[in-house]
Amino acid sequence: MKLLEEKIRQDGTAVNEHILKVDSFINHQVDPALMQEMGREIADHFRNRGITKVATIESSGISPALMTALSLEVPMVILKKQPSKILNQDLYQTVVTSFTKETNYELTLSKKYITSEDHVLLVDDFLANGEAATAAIRLIRMSHATIAGLGVLIEKSFQPGHEKLKGQGIEVYALARIGKMGENYIEFWE
Ligand code: G4P
Image (cartoon, rainbow, N blue to C red; front, side, top):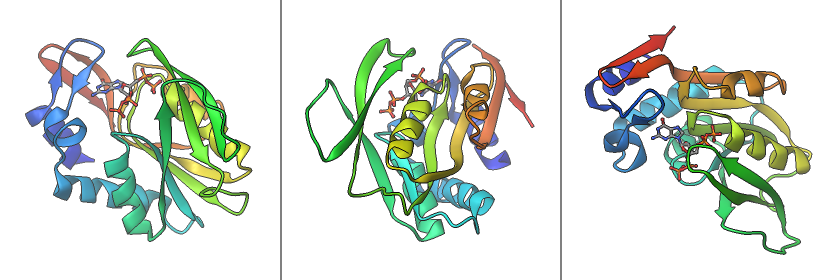
């Protein structure tokens, strides 16, 4: 998506070869008009596939997921993070290891909001190692719902997330794919 690539070039910062800062329009401050365009673009890609829910991981996934859900006219469901294991029969739970943040956390989904009747589109801001998305897919599969795919704003294609998800039979659609980056340059893949 040219609009997002231009915005990343203009307002994003490659902190080093691994981390892209997009705090001014995605992660800390949010550009609502751009977010709505991006949500519509993801929705258009997956439209007419019988999607009943859009699911995301808190917190930065919420803006793109909400805009995608709005465009698809379906509810958005938030998978919530808990610092440690809690006992709760109303939740599906799984552990996620974040390589970027070097932490473990528990990802949870209320049994009420995704059921075997649902066909779910997962949406997130970044795809890096794919650990969070893989855990989200585990939770959705626990509910016996089916998965339409994963839509992300930015994929860091030099990290293994895309391949990992493809290997699990998940279609990945990314609005911007970064092949390589460093202090003063960002290379996008078509
Ligand atoms: P993974 O989910 O793909 O395996 O990635 P990883 O564990 O490495 O990433 C952990 C967190 O860091 C995720 O956010 C992910 O979105 C974010 N992240 C990964 N690479 C980048 C990057 O280059 N730039 C930015 N800005 N974020 C990145 P999170 O912990 O779920 O945090 P949040 O959603 O609350 O913001």
